[in-house]
Each structure stands twice: as structure tokens, then as C-alpha cells.
Image (cartoon, rainbow, N blue to C red):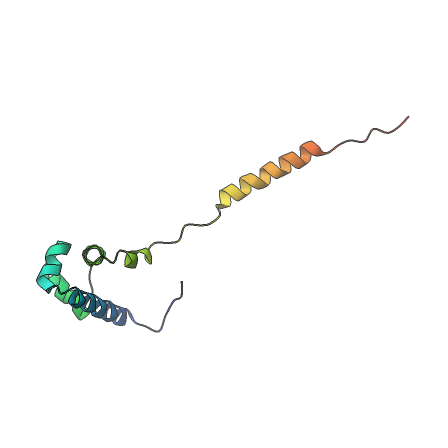
Length: 109
């Protein structure tokens, strides 16, 4: 994930608010209708669109109401592709197999 440290929290809130407003308008919803679909207050939608900040609950409800749950995926960490515990277990199994394969040579008399 690429971080953009030069962008302030306030700028992110404004960008998100603009995107919510753009999408709401494209879907031809009023703020009141979006609020109703998201089960939040109209003032929460207004604040969000102004870039006034919001709770995580409001962001989730609005993303769902707008059909944009993919926005939420960026908030969840990616599952590890390889489990460190599983790697350790596999290594131990390989070592156990290697030890059991060691053959002792019998010296001729």
C-alpha cells in the first residue's frame, strides 16, 4: 500500500467528501435520501460531504448505501500469503525426515 504522507487528514476528509457527493449526485440521490438509505442523519451526510470528518460507522454505512464496499477493503490488512507458524512446522517436518534418513554405514570387518 502506498502512503501519501504529504496529504493532511483534513485533505483526505475533503477528498472523500467530494467523492461521496459526486457519487450521490451521479446516483441522483438527495442528501436526505442517502441518509435514509445509510440509516444516518442528513446532517451526518452534509458534514461528510463538507469534509468535516465522520465516524467509522458513518463511513461504512455510506459506503454500503452507495454500493461502494470496495472502499472498505483498503482499511483491512491483507491476509498473509504464508503463515509463519506453518513455515516453522514444515521446516521441523523436513528436519525430522532428514534425521530419519541418515544411514549409518556399516564398516566391513
